[in-house]
Image 1 (cartoon, rainbow, N blue to C red):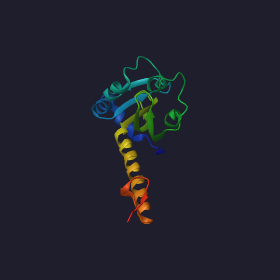
Image 2 (image 1 turned 90 degrees about the vertical axis):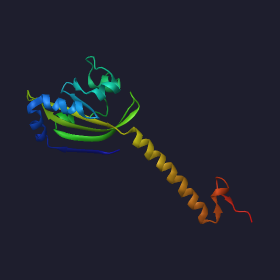
Image 3 (image 1 turned 45 degrees about the vertical axis):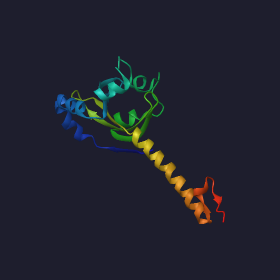
Image 4 (image 1 turned 90 degrees about the horizontal axis):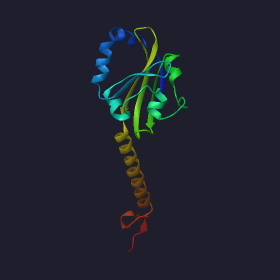
Length: 164
């Protein structure tokens, strides 16, 4: 799992000087984007989030994204909102069965409230390809191990001695 945190959200203050511009940017990206306030309320979702998770209908983020009745046990909301740190990790959504590269960063809203901006890139295909490559590599390593002992892996698996 990839994970990191850092603090510096002054750049977001500049972007939110015109909230309409920020929303236009978030609406135009291919990644899922959302904004969560300090009370775990979903304030904004773009079309990618809507397509993956449906309408919010007043649900808290943990209800909306994870179908939970309480705050997610893995939640880093306080790291982002209270400590002001950007958080990065891979996240598997049990709701839509996809793997996301998730970046959550603090954002100062026009009213001064610190909210969480989340950007999620669907990396499901890449993760499946990585797993397939691991299987191929493991298979090739077994083939090479067989040949080191004068065995032929091409006569079947597991390795069988070469008949003369």
